[in-house]
Length: 494
Image (cartoon, rainbow, N blue to C red; front, side, top):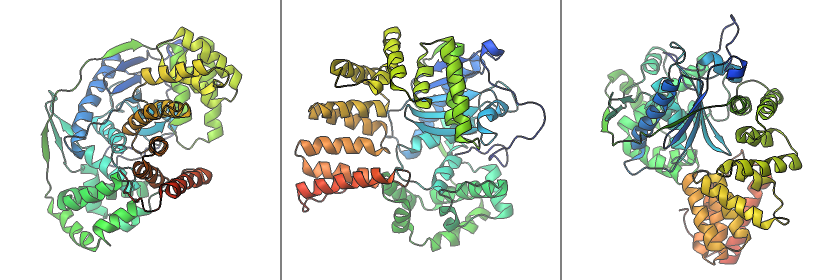
């Protein structure tokens, strides 16, 4: 999900020349790193502290503005980790210059990776970059299935948001100047060609630019000229309907759309929305990061940021950063959590996790790590404490809530498990595990219609990225529920 910078604004490859700057820790000659936390964001960065705080405030304003794209009542419970490096040169160490912004989904929750403004080193990321990647994050709560053209088209549509200096107003819907220029000069891809974008990795710069510009155009056109049908299409995606089937049921073969698109491009007529913004949370906490934490961040970027570096090379570099971080501080939670992901070895991680919860009893990630490696049969009380402590301290982490729900169900506490599973679904409506856990609780409570409904939603959320054995198992559970509940019980997904 690459942000497009400048008039072409797309994926930027760095040219050969002077050595690439590196985002190092202070002990190695790097800048001071800061963590700034607001209501919905944790920003970790080597920007100057004032630029870090400004970005956190701006992200809160952008979030509030972008929520209106899906209606005044859209208010997900979310908390986002954000890592910002000073510029594209520093980010390129981890991404090989393939993007200036990226949204990732990790087992620790959503992660935005951004670079500061290239033209003003050390200053905050451009507003367009923040808005683009934040749109990708927020759309996860609404569009449970979405093709790439829609995902990038919406992000491109909303990246042109403008905020009043005092944060009281947002203006949305202005055309993207670089995309508009491109489609007017060079044309655009037909919607049929954009459907084929899914699963493709485009390496040709011109092809990339054309796909992004065309996606923006189609979304801008549909919002302005076919808003009711576009809303209906999104509503089907929000119910986990397969994207092509949803499109066909609303737009058919799209012939009427193609006829009107050229006139739309030439007319230059479009709607712009000026939206008053309610006050957003302004309280910030800030702290300077130790070098061990910086090594953990660098390791996470190697491991998660992507790019063309091979997995083995990324893993090797991530391990080196983890090892250095743990040498500097054996009880650094971020380094210990990442170590568990890049290394196997139960005993070492378990003993480290025990030490972590003693040193950091208020750190949910430490308790979560302990729960992962505990032998519940040998230490059931410690496991219960670890699961409940992690969930209490990380209330907005869907995976942690899923694990607590699973723990309750394993102990026969069905109502408690159901309550926590519902919270997990609210936190991550696009993840099928929460629905499957709800279905299990409801089935065991002999609430068959609801159980079937939620298990059908879990099946609807299966994709090709899930292993075949997992897909088969998820479908087999539905069949077993149907067999025991009776085939006459039919209900649509929730």
